[in-house]
Image 1 (cartoon, rainbow, N blue to C red):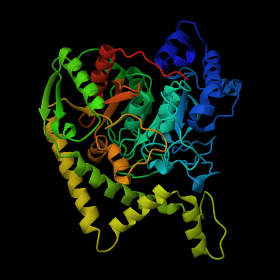
Image 2: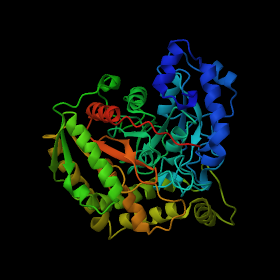
Image 3: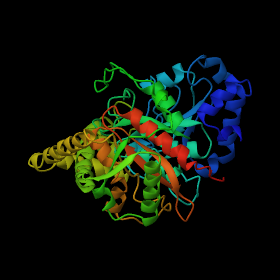
Length: 476
């Protein structure tokens, strides 16, 4: 196995055994980026530091010592530009590191670069980037999903051992599904959002994209924890997630929401997911059909709540404080031109939707109603988790579609139908590969758990991963 094909755990084991050193690892991944990046386009910025510089600056003795990771370009990095894949932030260099970057560096992780995304994390294909679309390593004519598409592609292509993404409505899990990697969305509040450039503050959460489930647990250990700089950060005792990496689902009670499978979606995806359910059942899990609130209601609530929060959060990008500024004859014109020229079409669309939903006379009809639906969804999940350990579903209604495929706007938004309810409820979930369609494109399997139920999710995901033993890798 080549160095760039190894998981973080395998690299750490080989370092401990003396088979590899940190320089070998960093050089191998640098060479891989040089080899494939012009085709994949996973990165917006690649670190310009020499390997010798990285070695000199790296913290030693940490849990991720010498492991190269990529970071979605909506997380602040003091030594690299942070653009959110938007023209309005081109040239912006933050004066500080996000909390998760601090933690990665403290544990010896090396930031290889900043990855591409849908502009301000608004999209499900990474085609909404202001710079270029990222291409799927399994088939370069296909999308990578979004909005954390660059991070998922970088891991799948072997450009890094692992990556960080952010998940507002499925933005870690859906690209993980499309790219055949593991994507974990933690419980809201488990990982500090300090330094994450906000899209929708009550929904955004940072999480890992990795080669396997074990690495998800490893990175979750590093980035989870209370941070007083983030008022939504949970102050609690965090377990060692590596303790849940064991092959055992005996007695696990798993619910399968009938409303998810009543949605019209790809038949190959449906069959592959159902086959995986049988694998879990044969391994000792108790599988039962359950009823949830239809995912369409969560989708409708999401596309009111998220744009409303985006409308407020993105008001700060006005050409005055940071980012690009358009020339104009007066301040009012400068605001208008800066935002008109700096934001892409999808970002402008969502800002307008959100502003409308919050406007006088419409607040009660839209935003308030959406929040009431959110409460109902959250309560229904809590009720189900009082009787079931986990819920499972497809991650996405389809495999990766072709870049540039003409899609109706509502069809694009429906790509998140299975992932959005998780964010609405604030619960954790993971996507792991469970097979391939007839085109050879990966299919994702989603496992959802109660608040702070990451342990049971990881244990079940690890068990399924071991039973399926998928060994295919993209050929680039």
